[in-house]
Image 1 (cartoon, rainbow, N blue to C red):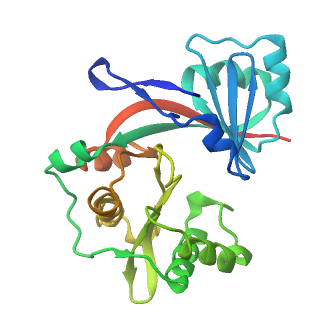
Image 2: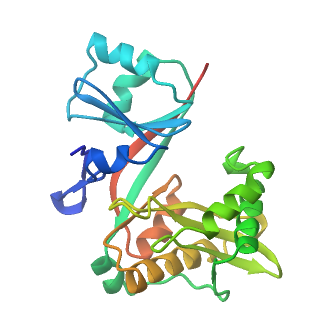
Length: 256
């Protein structure tokens, strides 16, 4: 079992990666690589790096890091602090992880006000609208390309439960949305929470996240959801929905 232990509130401990390696490596998109006390969960263009507490890289582990074929890397703060001097990176960004369980969700009484009810996305056209939204979000950069919209929409519309996605629409245009990634593993994530700049500050993102929690916990019997956030305001909103902070990570983009 590959585990990165993160501090929770009140001194509790949480495990981010709780899946066994066999379950991950059975997915052709994800590979697991290890060197000594360092493990890398490798995706097509990025890698999650996990190490023991107090880890410092050996010479072999330093070589291993330099040879990872990843444009971007993310690791817990103490792990990334040891990694950054070994590689050339163009940006380094703090990212915070939060998590919520059904108990947290059902006991939380606070909700952000939003007059628009999100739509649970089901059809090919629904998902085309979601990816068109993402291409218009400045912070998402080149994450979603126009030429991939049809392929991505077909992939999303054919995914089985407990996958779900939601968006707030104005007319036929999605203006805020998000979806569940890693939906068939215990560390399911609410991913790509995004709102068009001109529609921010209206509670749309909180409404979308609430809709995904509703369907995940009430209908799909999921046991945990996690998400990343980068700004204080986003953290405040997610805490109001019942999420708890569990750790700070550093995300870097590598210079080639």
